Amino acid sequence: MRILVANDDGIYSPGILALARAAARYGDVRIMAPDVEQSSMGHAITHSRPLSVKRTPIDGFDAYRVNGTPADCVALGLELWEGVEVVLSGINLGYNLGNSMWHSGTLAAAKQAALLGNRGIAFSTPTRGGEPDFERLAPYVQEVLDLLLPETSLDLVNVNLPPEPTRLCWARQSVRHYDGRVVAGEDPSGRKHFWVTVKPVEEVEEGTDRWAVRQGFVALTPLRLDLTDGDALKQARARNPLTEASSRASSTREA
Ligand code: MN
Image 1 (cartoon, rainbow, N blue to C red):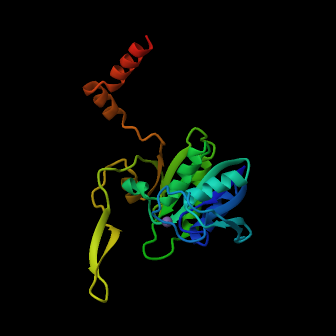
Image 2: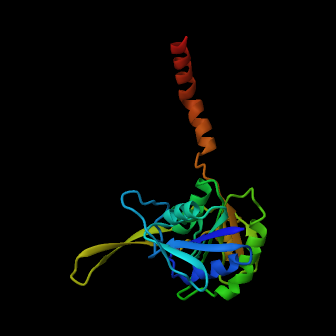
């Protein structure tokens, strides 16, 4: 099995090496990752300048650094290496829970794989001020891969590992609370500036990814690319039957 490994923390992050080592038990691994950190870049792609791919072997792994985004790396990786069966992204230094999935470059790399008809699995873990204990996480990453790699019907899964995992848990995305905030400050010259940062989310709903990691569970959240709100669409159609009106209009025209 050919496994492409990407991330958003950059090719020299310890997290990507931990993931590549875990993946190597299951097949041939190639690393394709941003040359510098691209965290919180979301699903950006580079379209106004060319990209370069430079070989950077890492700890015996066939690895390439790209002057682009996480999504660029996956698009390039799948273009340049035929027969990839799954793309793994991470292990990100920091959780990607709930609404932070909208900003996550780690998840975007996995999403890019799914967009291109491949499969993507994103892995994230908190840092708690220091480097995560990847040796402690390794058996759980392996358990996740044992479970998910044969599950070919799941083409996009977001995985969050707490620092001291106990077991695996299916979880839905928590969306009730958003942790993004802007904090104002002053630079040494007294000029006002702002930091876009996060605030801790205290409340958690049972069954969500946030709740799961708080219980010490590895949260596995299957995702889909279709963002359509089915209920809202149905209600909007009932209130304003635009489609019916326009299809009647066009059939009238055709007649
Ligand atoms: Mn990151």
